[in-house]
Image (cartoon, rainbow, N blue to C red; front, top):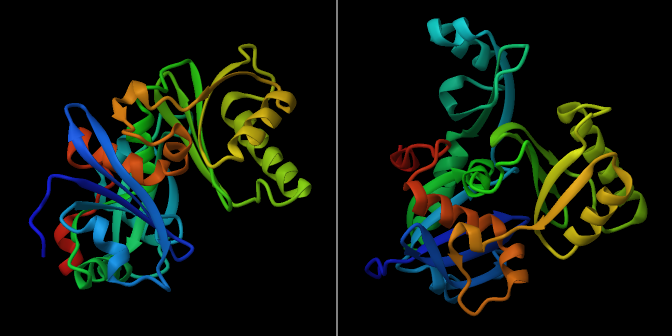
Length: 300
């Protein structure tokens, strides 16, 4: 194994494709060295060479984690953790001991405390660790992708109402904020570019989400829209501006404000590689995320 070179590598695997960003910590930001992707089915050892010697931060993606939503009264959550764990275990398909859980507490609502529970089966968690170990890669952290995105977007989502949207070929992720506080997050599986009907379905789902969170007939119609992802993000944002009953202030996600230095990479590449890039950024800012399971659980 190579000695640690000082680089961080953000790694995401989805649809049998490994996508990565390598970066060097630079004060409160990161300096991007390289980006790339390859198919795991045809990959050999040479494909993994850019990751050797890096501290790898793995993004647990939507196909690997389970998501549960709980509403608990304030006093119950604070005074009776056993009741809380019973509520959580009741929604688990298997014994609760078979999962690693992480909580994202959202803004309190009239129903009480709204908690998003992200969980991963210990068997899956171990398999990911073994996959890295077989290739002599240094797996330093595993982080649920929504938390990495939240850590990355926090400095920019300070408006009264803000939406961060990450657009990819098969999935669109939304995070909605009020005064900088995360109030809702959703993952939409509708196609956003393969057909007119798929794009229309996606727009309908986005509209329903925004109206349920921000109100159907808002007196304040202004919403800051931050967007990243592949090239189809432009058509999605244009359709939202033209169709939905809000006054969107559109920002193609600004990496400069996050102190992310792109090297020689064009901005389009950074948008496309947002997921692994956000892992590097979140790791460098805090060395851990609230949703990062314990590292030694890989070996348990």
